[in-house]
Each structure stands twice: as C-alpha cells, then as structure tokens.
Amino acid sequence: MTLAMVPAGLVQDTTEAPPAVGAEDWHVVSRSSATVFLVDVQSIKSEGGVTSAKLARVPASGEAGDLTHSHGTIDFRCSANQSRPGEEVLIGADGSVEDRINDGYDFDRIPDNSLDSYVKSMVCDGDRSTARYPSIAAFIQAGRSNR
Image (cartoon, rainbow, N blue to C red; front, side, top):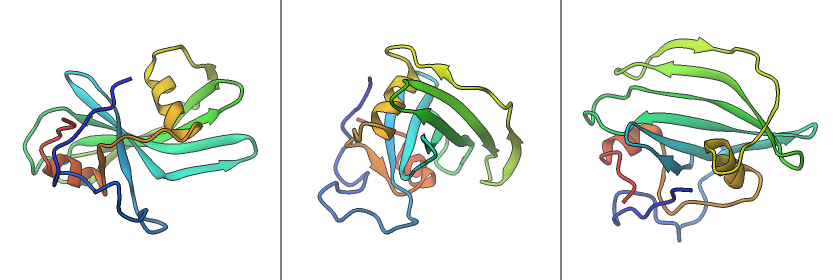
C-alpha cells in the first residue's frame, strides 16, 4: 500500500477536529505513475451488510486548473472480503459532469495487494492517510502531490 507524507501547508492538519458532517475528507490511498487514488472517508456508510464510500481517480499530473478526474462509489462486504464498483462519474477539465457509468457489477473477492484491498483497509478497518484534502479540487490545486 502506498500511503505517503505531504509537505506541511498542502493538506489539512490531521491534529485538527474532524471535518463537519457532510464535508469531504479525501485521503490518498494509492498512487501509480498515471493516477492518484483517494477515498472520501466522510462518505463511508453502512447499510444492510454493505459498507460504501466514494473513491476518486485523479490524473497524477496536469495543470492546477484542470479538474479532470472521476469518482464513484465502491461497496464492500467487509467480513466476506468482497467488493464491487458502483456508479462512476466522469468530471471534465472545467469541473462539470461529462458522463455517468454504472455497469452493474456483482461482488467479487478482493485480491491481496490490490487497489480494492487498500481501499478496504480505509473503509472497513479505519486506516487513514496523513495525505488528506478537503476536496478533489484542493488536491489538484496543491500540485497532486502526496510527498
């Protein structure tokens, strides 16, 4: 799992009080050379044995004004070690919704050392990153960095 440190001033101070109810609290969960993955821990909710959260995929590089990214829901059956993607929303450079995709996937087993296993550790087990942002736009404007 890739949980990284971020220079002071670029992210929310983790010693502050938690964000207000309804606020976003995006934590960097993993990074590849092309994409940074973040989970909004304020969006975590459980109902009927399913725990869900918002997961964002943001290009790892780009201009500060380019808000291109996608975000969607991811559902877990925590104790069964299963996940499924929900609706994915594609956001354009200007921040507007360009498309919505929902392929209606079923739950699948979560492989070890996969993105879903890292997200599950935040959503089901309460793990948190020190790299956190109040919005996806704030992450992009901070230079998309998690170190």
